[in-house]
Image (cartoon, rainbow, N blue to C red; front, side):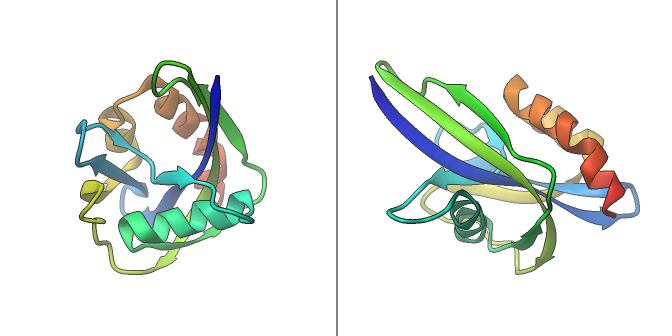
Length: 137
């Protein structure tokens, strides 16, 4: 069994609707999810999450304490993948989709983002993050 590890971040910002959530829609497969990517060399989990966020979306964020969730799945036969997610408040950057991987980047109201997420595991991650997000608007 091959093992992979990625890290990502659930990014939010205050909005008229309460909180907007950053989602990416992947170029290949078309699924909508949170930005994430593989851990490189000597990176920490948080360094990976912030690097992947900026590479895939152009956004910058400050990670908040109190949320570190892991999801595990098999992206292919004989592969087990752990993905660690954090919550971050957007601090800047210009939203730009990484052309090689991302078709679209968008900030959506919380409820719309919850509906737009493709996978139930991502919906559960966002629901677990809700109290931290709304406490930090």
